[in-house]
Image 1 (cartoon, rainbow, N blue to C red):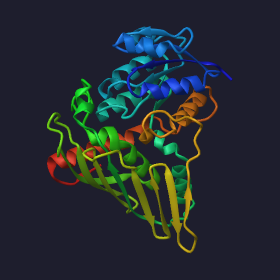
Image 2: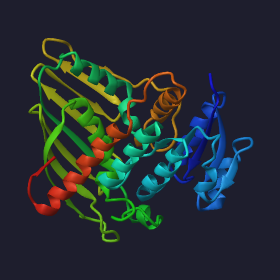
Image 3: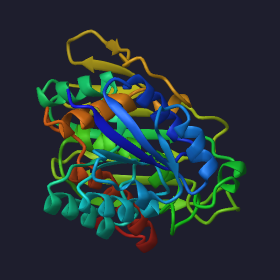
Image 4: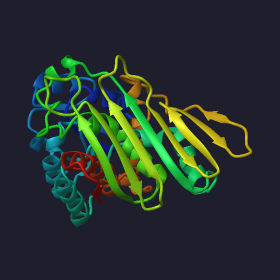
Length: 339
């Protein structure tokens, strides 16, 4: 097995997941650079890995010996960093969303194809065991023709969440609020499970209880797919705690869903059953982050080594972003938007 040289840009909150992943995969990778504009954060990350160099400027990490660059930075600079890295022959695995505009997302995809370099987008909740099982049932036709789906996200993000950041809660840097930052995982999973191209979107976004920011803290939408299935979405971060995310998908032969990472299945003429997630033994941070980051990271590393494909490439990562941006557009226009 080839030992990969990796670097991470962005040593903030989510980097703790990567710290644990890198430790878990220490026999498979060398962590060469840790980068953050706050050098103290970069040094704090680097200290756990022998030989790892802390940097403030990500450009200094774009060296020819780097195999994978992880991006855990504010959303608006994903494109700039990813494109520059890929032009130097470095594979990129970025946190979601891949960008805050489709123009930027397309430039990332085009660069990946032109340079023959891998681009991946983190949507770790797709890799939950129960989610994979539901996808298998759908593909086998066990649920029959899909009729409708829904997702509900009710989380808490108080004023301190935004006040402690210079980019959270901004349109120009985060790209929005609860939709693009929190609900995008539900949107990604649901469009993937439905497995059909989205046709139109209706929706509205609102700021109900966060006067300190301009972005939305509450959103609702209805998305129509070419298959005829409709997806009902509700998301808010005005709740009193981070309640388990709930998803349900209904077909003519049964229904299935998830409550956080616990899946359940109820098929016609078959007994109800549940599927508890089987993790890779890695649990870091808040429960809603899940434990599937490492599964996706390992898949990406293997694809870089030439041992299989990576499921969520730029095209796949773009799909949820397009739906998020379409909801924003539908809300602004107060009309149905066709995709």
